[in-house]
Length: 522
Image 1: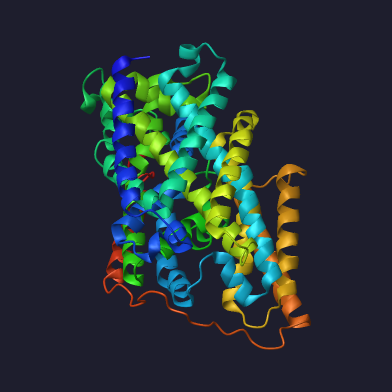
Image 2 (image 1 turned 90 degrees about the vertical axis):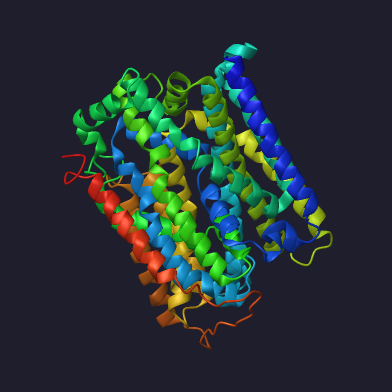
């Protein structure tokens, strides 16, 4: 292990921890609103950075670069196309949330259907966080740190025991920061990560190209642009990581769910001081998503030219950093990766505690104390599960998306029907959830249907909606549902939102033209 790298890592981590602690000390949460929503006083920069860094973590860095290394740029669709969805959510969904004054997305389901539906969905959310989101974040961070520092060689432990050790350390740190600062502390760390990411972090493609060009980055860039240009194609074919058609089927549904319904994402927006800040924050996060391919995808392409192949493709990102970057920068990036993972982990456990305390234990005494105890228990569960992700098949990122869809799109389906209809009853929501989850689980883990899982999601979405509408015709609600307004913040929209939407969507289209046979992949 390089001593300079280790020193740079600890200095960066210590500086960030001190700044977060200092901010958390001034704004220590003493109420549920402070712990879970930052007292609903977050500006657009805090909201935007909170959204972007609750969204990306070490799993994103490792998983997406692995897929570009072994495939092509088609995997960038997960981030780039979500920008369009984010603008739709900011215009149509978030205003409803802020006007109704809800604290969790299942709160809407209670208003629209009944208490049992809210409880069922809250349990599904928690199950997703416990078995999928939180363990994968810890595992990704552990793999990255092991790859960068060679902890197993330093300690003399085997690879798997080292993963256990790193997972436990990251989990403990994440829980400590969450208990200390709540959502407010997380947004402070998210803002710092944003500044670090979009300054020093984006130097990695330069270092990689310079290494490829034997000291000359222009030579390295020319190699990438003229050799194996099929890797630069984002228009995925049937056998690529992301077939282009899936962007308009299951991926659209997953992204709509994620940005409009996922609790740990929506919670960032619910902490906004007003609707305008919320919409500006979403636009800022969208701009960040369009820059992130430089870190999430392009390094994998350059690495394919440097290495050709690796024994373990999941290690490509950390291997690239270690081999091409100066020691100080390697330490800085290690801290950045750890920080990004901690931010997502904190968002996950904070939102899980929100769901547990406000939805499942509402009215029980000792709300703050219960929340903190639940966060500790949740962390322990995630630490115990995370190392076993090592044995999953098909790549970390694909596994994460496939398993996450088991919980996400069924919830989004009943949300959509709830928004667009007035007489579909609670019975339809319960039947729809059970039907969707059972069919999707069978298609992915029991029977091989010979179809991309994103297309399966789209088909089940349509069938489930039709099933719910049929139940609504058979046994409709006695009275039509009417939304009740309960504004907790100012809900005047941002006046420049349409201009921002147009510019971001134009950039999305332009990015796809650049990474296509019409552009760099010709």
